[in-house]
Length: 234
Image 1 (cartoon, rainbow, N blue to C red):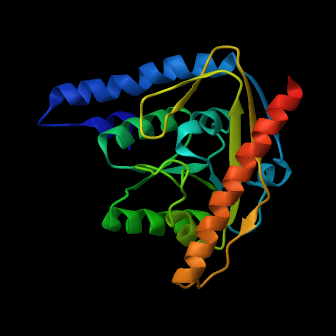
Image 2 (cartoon, rainbow, N blue to C red; image 1 turned 90 degrees about the vertical axis):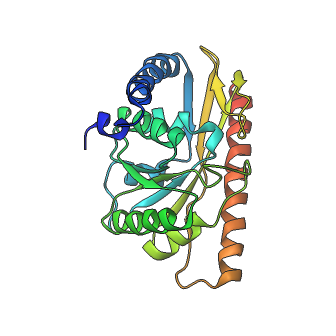
């Protein structure tokens, strides 16, 4: 499927044109902006094997909060890591932007039917050794609260979860539900990968909730560590 096929809107040709052009404009703004950043990283020794395709067995799930997804989008581009996005209009726009950065997409949704379909496709990719990027608080929030989908995905696929934290020295925050982070030009940014998590199979409801909280806390800890590393560099 070609990029433009995501935006063929027969009943609303204006939307088709707008949605085909918008991601390219965003990419033209995003890529040069990210190139101005002084971007550093830590904790990626284990995760690098998955990014480079040197893993044996299942791939990994790289999780980051929705508001800072632009950073791993840029830092890990063209590594063949898949990303799950929704079929909503904003999701289609995001999918095109991810693909322009070399991230293959898996269609999903917060809805039950599409969510199950995305879970199955994600499990298949992970078992094939492919890795996946995931925003556990997306696409609707609440902000910085992990949803159980990532637990089901990791548990069924036997995949490790890599919590990513991002800190930025100077930024704009958009008036969106996630207060989306846009770094200011020439800001410092640090991306930290926390300790990998092994989610066991065959979890009951209590087990799913326990691991949901565990992943959420690991992401918050990774974010705190990224902030600490950034402060140390100043």
